[in-house]
Image (cartoon, rainbow, N blue to C red; front, side, top):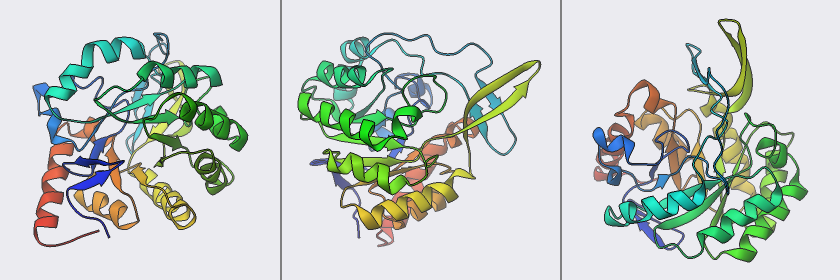
Amino acid sequence: MGTFPLELFGKKLRNPVMNASGTLGYGKEIERLWKISTLGAFVTKGLSVFPHKGNPQPRILDLGFGMLNSIGLQNFGIKRFLEEYTEFFIRRKTPVILNIFGFTEDEYVECGRLIGENPAVLALEANLSCPNVKQGGIIFGKDPKIVGRIVRGLKSVTKIPVLVKLSSEVTDIVEIAYAAYEAGADGLTLINTLPGMWKERDTLVRGGISGPFLKFLALKAIYDCKRSLPIPIVGAGGIMNVKDAILFLEAGCSAIQVGTATFLDPLAIPKIVKGLKAYFKRGQKW
């Protein structure tokens, strides 16, 4: 059973609520609506060794039941983020999880090398599950040998804990998760969006589908991995409200990430944090 607030990787978090990678930009943008310190930890959008321009428009489609995104991991590079944002998060006493990706295995490892011992960083989240890039992402995350090599590479260049973000779009997610654990991963993030396609005007758009339906797949992946591996799991996928958040925590998650819900309601995360605080104030635990 967990407690609230909680400890993760040796650091105390105000609460178990994080944003999902790519949903709050680099962090400063959302402060026009609410303070970033509302979060237990902030998760960056995907960062790479070099700046990356991402995919052409259209990038986001409302599917009615959820969302298809085809951002393609646009970002200005990990070095710039560390230079311009480290002090921002230290001042707000909000730990950062750096979501990292590469188009080669070596690029993942180089991301870990560039981070060094940055005091704002709680953990790395190796994105081995993005469905909307042609190299890396879910292509690497489907092969347990590649997953193991990337984790071992990261662990060889940094002492910062490594989370591995996986997709359920595999034959056996426990096999992939075990490869990450055996290579030294400190935790898992389960799950990412699922590959899909839809037509916008005259353009077929490939991307990752997200929304409430994902929670049914995420909960099964979390349950299966939790029974097999003794490492923390951060749950993600279809969490829309406090009821969903509690369900994920009861399923064995150490923390949860909220993504698509913030596009429907930019105040979804503060509402979930407030709801969880009330839940635990009544003496409930997960």
